[in-house]
Length: 383
Image (cartoon, rainbow, N blue to C red; front, side):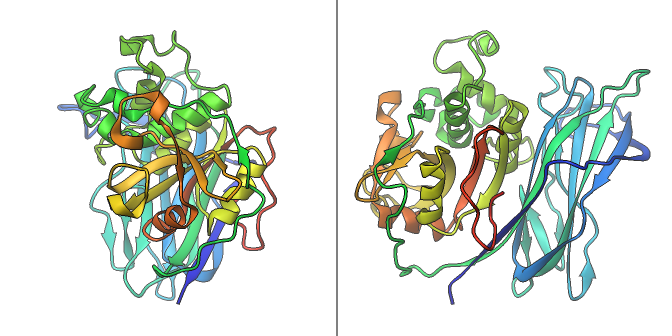
């Protein structure tokens, strides 16, 4: 039976921090790193009750971490058997140890419980299980100093979902997005193939930060050439700058969903991960002037015009043709290293299938605070 349940819960204000015991941490990704002591304070979300048995939970946060500070993002879930222990979603900072961060940005592997497990940036319930309550916890950590500049948090969110979509699901009918296209600057990930091997060998796998950079540039918040001068070349260095600030050392990639939205949040956007139910919902964003980043998976014959196959890929939705087909700035389009090749039109039925079927309508919502989102549906998966 088809299910498309998703509810986003978000906190933009009311972060009342409580004192917490000092935290000792030795950076697991730095050879021979000494254990350091950090001052700590903590915020816990209210318990969120789910009206359906959610099988996934994805957190998001927007924050600034001044030099010497970082965040520890945790979650816990509950079903009829009770609460799980707190598990780690991320140890996160804007920068890295080569810059101003005291720790390496990372998720944590091998967190498996009877109720489910953490898969990089997502809680997944065990087969046959589901979540009816969940909670997030954020700890702010800082190097001891007489004048501690604590991290500032402007958004914490979580999307709980339960998606089960059959391959023969009917395609949504074109709606308010038809004939609309948002002028989002194109960037090709292929320009960076085999560069910066320490970050997963360049553009073959940089689809997410390339897409995030396109949206940042659209909103006028991408890094300028001076800020990205450390890259050392003039071939879209703003993309490489983004890769450095979303790279997940444990995951060994730049595709961590929450890290990408956190990067956009640190640059001034309100940004989070959610799941949309179909292209009708995506059209509402386009009609409101808000482009999206979405995740797709497909074999080459399943998406005409792409010119590649993928087990997981991020691209943008920037518009719809008059017939309702999807206009995308696809950073891997045609596998050609050219920004001129990025804009691609995809058949609506094919695109919706490869977006919903394996990826459950995963989307990054990124917008300035003064740009309103469309009204959410009754079961609100955006706010």
